[in-house]
Image 1: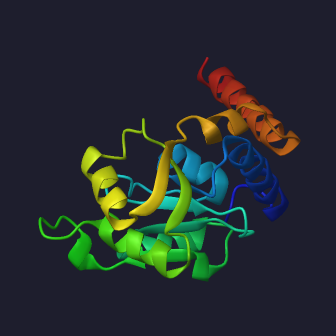
Image 2: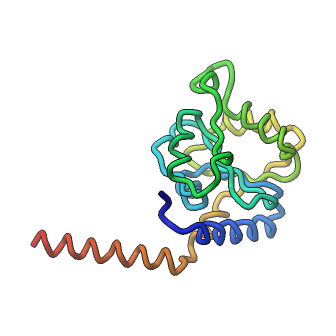
Length: 181
């Protein structure tokens, strides 16, 4: 149920990975909902809970991590394999004793992504200071780098598929406006 073909998303991933390499990043953690959607297709109103999209130069597909109950939406809207949609357990939701970034940090470490230079969208409305503090504490072997804008600059160049969809939307708006007159 994705908006674009798999090849479109693979191209987006390739262009993102190229920018990651230029920035010296070993891993990218995307937290802006628009950028998560752009790279994965994930489309839900769950951004008020902690979620990230993991982009590794070594993985073909990104990995969405968010609240367990929201993983179902990922299975419906993402172009990725179902195993690349990961939900964290409910005890991490709205808890004062544990934080979703604690769980995510352990998950990243278990997969060998607990070190190196990790890019994070630091100037995102959906990434709190506490989330960053907990991520840093959970990944003490990592160096963090601000990756704000990295995916946004990939998004600036529109593909033929995106232009086609925008043209179709424009025609629909024009039809609606003409019908209203």
